[in-house]
Image (tube, rainbow, N blue to C red; front, side, top):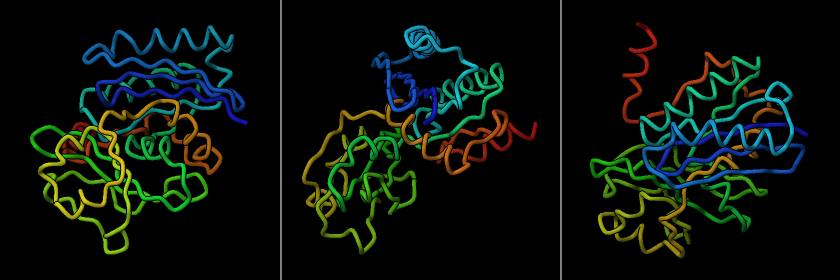
Length: 230
């Protein structure tokens, strides 16, 4: 079993979770623009509560996006800094996958996770629950709500809709909205789900060195590449 610290600041919510051999501790608060004040104290509280030093962990996971540009940078930087200090690998985790993982319950169910990307756009992807895990059916992308289109395999299927992107439901294709059986626009990505997803990723050898961790903006991949080249 793994010992993993997970961090997420990709939305208005800030969360940290500590997975210790199957047992999980979490801190979670919805406080916009206060992530820099909340995140590291949350980490300190979790480590103190578990009486575990940072160096005893196996990895640090973080919400790599998509989501708020500033928020993603906070979690990325914190994960890199902590991992470098403790000589640990990091595991980038999709925010959209984390939402799907937390909600996946019924075998075969379809989920569409969407986050408000501002500027009348959404970050979104679609998943199917298989063996308790979300399997990607539509690649992560950013587009106008009206441009969200499901592949033929998912058309007509009952959907579970998750995340703040569904605040734009009135602008979405009527056929897509008609497939939604349950809509939960107040669902946030959370570090708890990221810790559990990271456990599997770590076992598959998908962890990276701290300086190789990259956020996923979707809308602005070029900007990060330019910054990296400077």
